[in-house]
Length: 342
Ligand SMILES: C[S@@+](CC[C@H](N)C(=O)[O-])C[C@H]1O[C@@H](n2cnc3c(N)ncnc32)[C@H](O)[C@@H]1O
Ligand code: SF4
Image 1 (cartoon, rainbow, N blue to C red):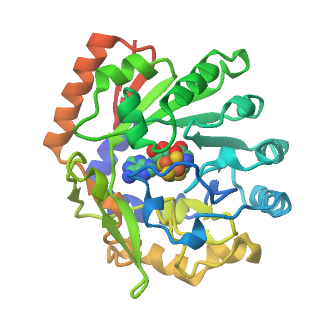
Image 2 (tube, protein in one colour):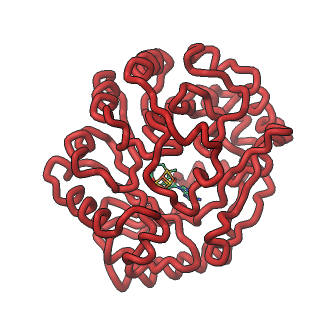
Image 3 (cartoon, rainbow, N blue to C red):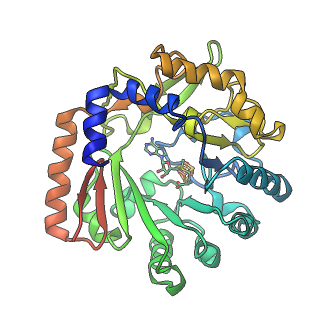
């Protein structure tokens, strides 16, 4: 964020910034489409919201035909970027290559996030993406296999090396997303995985469950990691741009409110009814209104609003600093707006 933007934000407050952007038509015109091409994942990460998802949303996949017509319409609505992941492992779709080709044929940017389990036979496809997010939390075999159960550490290491060394992938921006807990060993992590373009650190978040009775999200801490996950605090002013600036589509065409709406139970329609109808959907509009008035109900208990305290952040900054000085990884390290770079 530039200095000027920081000053404006501090002066106006988050809510007034959102209102101003909306009034100036800078919010509410999505440029990003997130889409799940498959519902399946081969991992059961103990912190992932999949642990609370209904069975009906854990399997199934999108057809190429449906995807192709969504992408064609997306370009007409000014979408510039396709993020090919919400709640599953995109590389497991048997026709992954064809999905990438459809996106590239429309000159759109594509971003992929993967658990690193099956990259070897996908290297040619991954060479076409604009940004590759690698999801890794472990700093050795034991911790890797705990966080990415039942994936195997040796396979992840082998695939990581393929990705780093493949000449066709040299220019692809590779970023590790590292959600940390109190146990994360940053020194060992930087030593093991510190050859990507960047490592983006944040706090491991609680996940969203969904209360069907009153159509609201509920934030829950993952039980298996309860002793190590940082206890975050609820933010008081709740502002979110996602219901304005992203269109999020499940493997079956159902519209999700955002990338944290893993259940897709809100009556937000199906993309088969067209982008125009999705953007004008009554429920979508009413949730936007909740954010614009500051009277947030649907998303009041969303995990997005569970944030770290200043002392938790300062403490983590010290730990990152120490690990950085000790290991000097080749990757840039990003933590909120702080950056460590050689
Ligand atoms: C849900 S995954 C889907 C894509 C793919 N399967 C993967 O793991 O990259 C997308 C991202 O969400 C992150 N994620 C899942 N649960 C999380 C949590 N409780 N806190 C922080 N990040 C989380 C994962 O680490 C991953 O980077
Ligand atoms: S974080 Fe990714 S790899 Fe892990 S269970 Fe969730 S979708 Fe699967």
